[in-house]
Image (cartoon, rainbow, N blue to C red):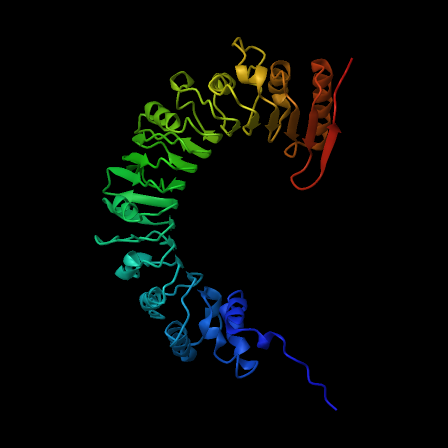
Length: 447
């Protein structure tokens, strides 16, 4: 007598089954339709619909039309639930002339279903986006990767509930940026990644609701940087700026700023020193700062005091006098507690020759120092900090870039420095990138 195995999952309410199916790739979700008559059309009511180029593999000219009809029916199925997410990734081109998919129609269908998130990665995206996308009140998240095409922002743009906007590999013209942002009244997370600008005098970002801002500008052509960056976001918490120095910066006071990641480099046609100084001055309330520079493109004498800064990560690449610049900058951060250094050093640096007043943060507040990509030439730098960081508790050094012989040599020199300093501190040496580390000592107390 055959045993009847009870199907416990099928007894779940439909809304739970819809939720389970939303975690499956669309192809796998469709396959569940053969389980039973109850499952036959359940996949059509999933709240997350994602298509990528892998679905195109194996399609022939004969079944492309069937695939088009399937997508149309899936998006326009009667009595459907609202969509949480519609995602279209262009591993192969969805909107080329060979296949002639109705991508614009698919986007409109998702918008009509009250979709909350749209994520599109398409070639020629600027020619595909329907105007309805920019007036959809259900959208909370919008991510567009235009692969170098222009994003055309209509004059009647209004995205009243949009909280996250990410544009990648896009080109924007004229006042489209200001027009777009000013009509996103609850925007909290904004990112322009590898974007370019044309026929534009300023990048104007004004949003009282904005909390996170990422600007990574495309620098393939110098003309892209002949503009002013204007930021008025008083409630900004996180700010990332990776680009060449722009023509000028006008930044309102960012009293809520907690973390900033700044990576700037010089562009010949710009007065870098003045412009970069204005950028750094604008983030003076930050608590945690990561800074990457390739030249001394702003003078520390023109900087304000960073009273709130307690974490500083310095990633400056090689330039003469970097040790002097760093010590000068430390004078601007009197309450610094954690310092991370990640830059190449060489025999040309002269830490022993420094005749400068010791920064107050070294005397009273600095408790942890981490040195990434340690080189044997950095012994002088370690010696400087051991001699002057009076309340130091932890020293972390990565030796992953050294040969085994260099590691042994560096370790012996470090041990000599530690004995001479007579400090009680934790010293951690990383010997490889992954897991192996050696705790040299949890306490150094030499009599």
